[in-house]
View 1 (tube, one colour):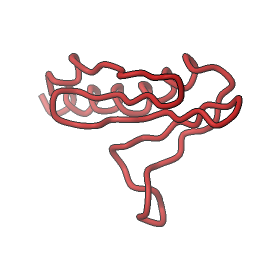
View 2 (view 1 turned 90 degrees about the vertical axis):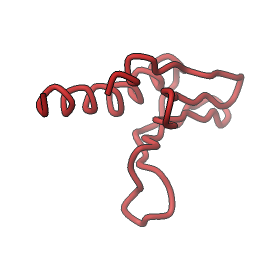
View 3 (view 1 turned 90 degrees about the horizontal axis):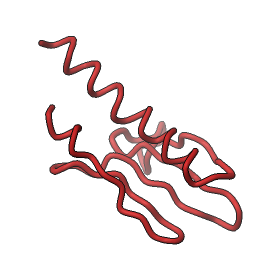
Length: 82
């Protein structure tokens, strides 16, 4: 999964998404003064959206939460399979 090393954020004032060369990995959305983070690699329990990772006061904190839930587990699974 070398594409994960190429994951990058595409940012705007209210919506940001984390993508690698092949996939949309996560996104964060600002609503008023909170940032809501979502794991775009897994459906939520109802199967009608993405896994909610939490709400955060800071954009950077939301981005870090999304990265830790999407990039790090995928890298660990890739290393375990090697």
